[in-house]
Image (tube, rainbow, N blue to C red; front, side, top):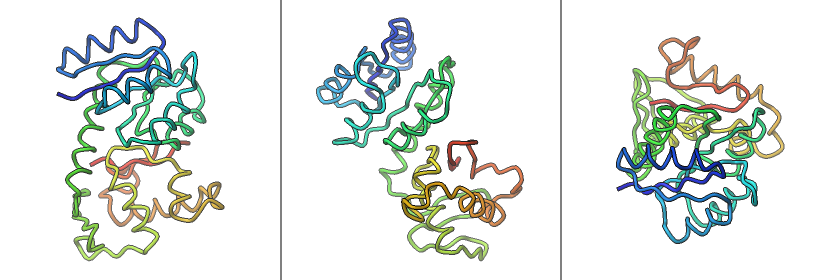
Length: 222
């Protein structure tokens, strides 16, 4: 049974999530603040954490940093904050996905299932991945249909494909591909993503797999 730690300081949200997740056969632990969450994560070794950013004692981003110091378990952030910057900081700190409050339980459950699938895929160490009409061999660095990719295109694509369903922030891609001095050069990224879509998507103007999250980053949708 998948163990989920839910962290939120609003009792009604904790109760609603505990009931809905338990009804779908998840084992649920709850925590109302950051310190309790970090202790519960150590004691209970959850498979996934659902984390509110606005906690009364420790900022949610700091909780993410605390978790990432020793574990790679998936973290889905709940954010009631209007701006994108908080979400970007959470993603850069190591969160796997986010849901904006108020949210529907069906949306959150879909994100939970997506993260679980992604974790299973990573554990299976996929060598090849289907993207639309193409099969991409990450180990051999080949694309079916005699598609040729540049080294930079491969770097970006591999980063997205190895984290299916996960939103990868612009900052993370720019840092990993070009280096920390280029974190503001988002036009580089837009150019290369357009090139990848022209080569790999059936309809580059309406991509089905290499998706833009405006102002946030990109995700690969299998």
